[in-house]
Image (cartoon, rainbow, N blue to C red; front, top):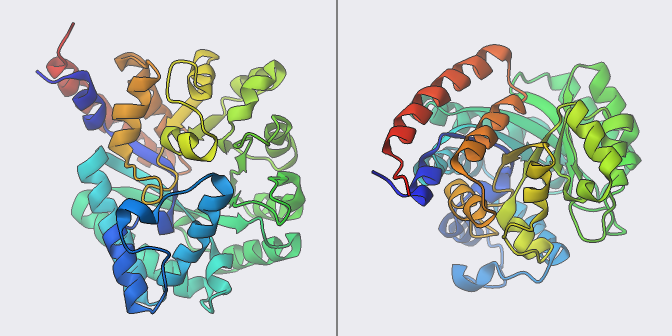
Length: 347
């Protein structure tokens, strides 16, 4: 028999909301910084990732991209990140946010970034059976015109692994303002790319960002979205459209200062009948992993086994992969659920 935290750890999982640069381990981050002469504020993982709030974290997130320069850097991060997530959280499928604009500012072209990432992820898929997709993410600190240019690159190269576009970071004014990038999203939609966006995440965000993302940007799923619970009409809209929200429990304790308990906004989203899929967001920076998000995050919010399985399955429904891949994942998850349910210690 196994205890409930172990059950949550071992549940098969997808991850739909993780940023590629954050899937490297802290030791590898420090190693690559030394390799490329990047000065870090600290070289002790115990203090390197101490952040006061979201803005403080984003500064560190941006300079993390400085340590990824050579093809072997990208390939190693891709491969080792999958191996760790399988061991730590029973990962079965993952979609990565990759910001081409961050790397362009560092002199790396679109294919110089995407090709080695895909190579590393393909190798990991062969060894561990973990499928993947990529979300090309707009850096909101850049201009709307730059966002259109980035989407034009995505379309021009047509890599089958790049399934969607998204948007993250904050604008130069430290706001979300998702509608600023409507032209980029319209272009993506015309070319059949899926769409998502970081919205309604922070204490200073508004629920209207959810409306903009759904009705003006054409997003099929949303990242975070916690402020939606402040607007019952938007909750109804998202529920009717069967929108999946990729939520990241541990990061909210740092970026928003919320306590992981039964009063958490994620729990309110679940109770309102919204679909949520749990992810890490930025595992290295928040000292988390996919297993911890379930084992500690869901448990602290009072989520029971049946709901945890629903969350795991919603990760399949929200994925941007094809129907055949989804069907295979559902069958695999169903078999693993049966085995774990038989082992779960009952109170």
